[in-house]
Image 1 (cartoon, rainbow, N blue to C red):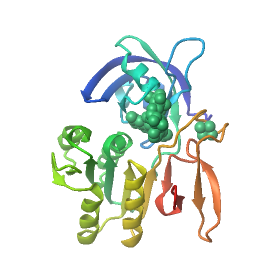
Image 2 (image 1 turned 30 degrees about the horizontal axis):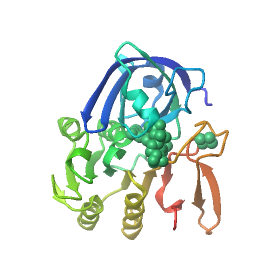
Image 3 (image 1 turned 45 degrees about the vertical axis):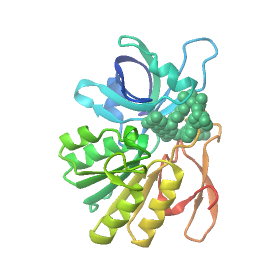
Image 4 (image 1 turned 180 degrees about the vertical axis):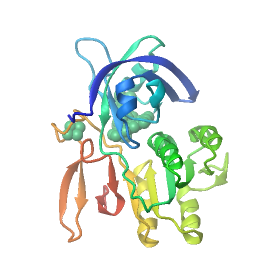
Length: 268
Ligand SMILES: Cc1cc2nc3c(=O)[nH]c(=O)nc-3n(C[C@H](O)[C@H](O)[C@H](O)COP(=O)(O)OP(=O)(O)OC[C@H]3O[C@@H](n4cnc5c(N)ncnc54)[C@H](O)[C@@H]3O)c2cc1C
Ligand code: FES
């Protein structure tokens, strides 16, 4: 655990349904808010009994450093996130973080395209906000199976960030896959870096397109995790070097953000 990582009992200020199974929780944690970088996550203890579940990793979606607040955008999937959904304002949430490497952009990378599949917008929102504040050009491509999975669109637009939306079923935005939109953008525009987070098939397609157009690309991976701090090796991913040799890295400590072309995706 790094010196900039804290374990704290954050106070829940807000925990509301956005739509369907998606929720936004805002907690007060000046330590995490002050130290967090885009792409990092917190490990949330989901239970208060003597036999708690393993912590669950949730990306840092937003921070308000001046107010010491941290926003978490999450999907209720199973026991852990259902427990999170039951937390009320005023209660505490045991979080460990910020963890992971986060996105590191070079000074010359001015034109960014961020590609989010569903709740994959969670870490990319923080990146979009920080990159925009740093004077970079940012555009966000949001994709989902249907309208319910398109999250954070209004907040991005309010920050003046251009957003384009696709849904697989055509219920909102362009009809089709978000990678179709990315292909069009990469055909017609100069882009310095693509950053993506979402389901693995989407990340594989984003990686292929970025390699084809010779645009550097980062992907944020959402492997299953246990300890979250590099001790159990429960979250490894294959990384291929320039000579084709594969080594295994922890998503929790070496990631969750990796250079896309180095990742050995399942079945690849
Ligand atoms: C670095 C990182 C950041 C993440 N950030 C977010 C975030 O910001 N918002 C968010 O909603 N989710 C995020 N996730 C995924 C989140 O951690 C899982 O959805 C959560 O742990 C599920 O816990 P649970 O107890 O509710 O469900 P479980 O009961 O553990 O699982 C329910 C179902 O979800 C599947 N599942 C569990 N974990 C994962 C996973 N990591 N990837 C894919 N499927 C999984 C299980 O196989 C099972 O089918 C992140 C994961 C990682 C590794
Ligand atoms: S979750 Fe234990 S090493 Fe990554």
